[in-house]
Image 1 (spheres, helix red, strand yellow):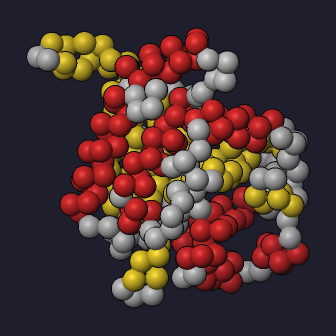
Image 2: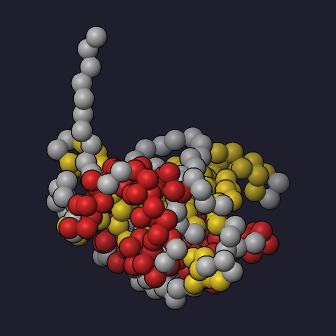
Length: 261
């Protein structure tokens, strides 16, 4: 019997705990398709005429931030039994894949004020994060592990998960630590025909898939269009069904018209 044992970095322990706690959230999941043909053309045209380039991912985060600001309860945290804590800013936690001694490790990066900062700034932040050196002593990008975080890794599982539950009961701490929106994209890695449903402890989470060419009905004619697959997890504790639908409709319109391009 041949096998090998491979140790994963400590940051992976936190990911496991987040998934375990996230499964207890009352998320409603939507599997969506967006026609991004025109938007991608606009991004290409924008990059051909501007020195500061923007990426499709950065533009998408910007559109999500802008739309969420109109539906601010979508990214609110539950406070106690019957109150919401609504933050003025939309801080988006995205996953950046880093190389650690030959192993690809997903590490979160917080895009602060995604509802206000420029698409160029978001593009630059993502690029900088990808190129930044990373060691196993990092739990959050650009921050070294603090002493209490080192203690966290040594705790048994039930205590580590209690730590995350404690954070969620204290929205100010949760917002400071991980923002109020999660964004993860497999489309940044490769093309997959389908949807994936992430697990998150955030009030709202976006699972962005690949952009694929598909036949679509446009004005009673069939055309080949570029379609983005996306899943959206929305916390039913802070948002009712009708506002969910209105938010999705506005998000669809903003994505498909190429908002701010």
